[in-house]
Image (cartoon, rainbow, N blue to C red; front, side, top):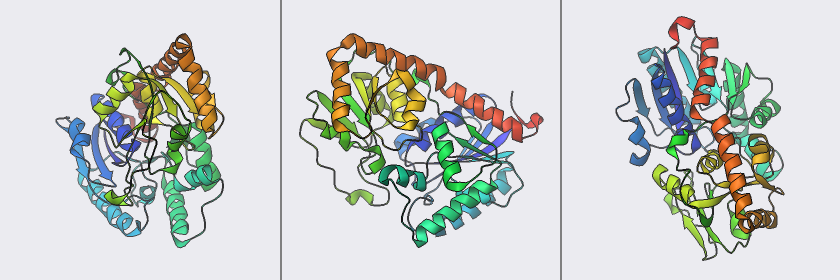
Length: 367
């Protein structure tokens, strides 16, 4: 079987595509991977080298959530059609909504990683303001969803958001994202350090909540400072001197940071899934999480929750674990075991293959 899989290089979708592509290749599925958003950095591309059956096509075409993306979407759609004619895939798996409306007679899957409308509701508590761009965006996403044979979301909460804002979906399914546990160090000696990872330019990540909590222990906030919409001219946010602020990290640096940390602060107010908390759990960090529906769904009794968007509540949750090392170790083990049981890359790949088999003739699907 051959699939065409799209991704982007800006956030967690790249990691999702890496885990999925590698898992599919190991199961005999050939993958044409097309990336959008920005050309990938060298540190992002190491895993693509030497993989038999992978055909990687990086592009700088703008993503649908970016302003002034309409012309790029038109050109990139034609680009994809040319690749489809060239490679003749059995199935198209998109990480963007807009390509669901491509005029091809091939099964199409969309994974709903996030979207502007649900993001805006979560961050601002209301619908995005009407404009020519928001009208174009809603119409583009709705058309893409109508054209998809199946729509996958990484949580039940995200699936409900898609149905609420865009209507009924074709074959809606929840498949949790997954990571490979062996990629993370779950046995390192822990330090008295609290970590959060998230794009500093993204209001939804709300990393400032950790800065505002007034914690006296070592605190590290890591994530890209500059938005791809703004470029490198963005100014760094100013936090108190005791907070270590680190810009975008490589995968190796993330693994080292999480191995060292004892507690991970999941501060997001909008998170359809959240790969960083999963990576922290696989590193045996205890999770202190914002009380939002998706985190409740994913982590249930294995995280310490604090009142939504409340810096004082975050501080109290962290201090509760810092004062009681045995309790911290208990929660870190709970999160670790839940992550391995529910959110492994192997589970994710197996679930996607089930969907592929439901849409593609059985003879084309690897065992």
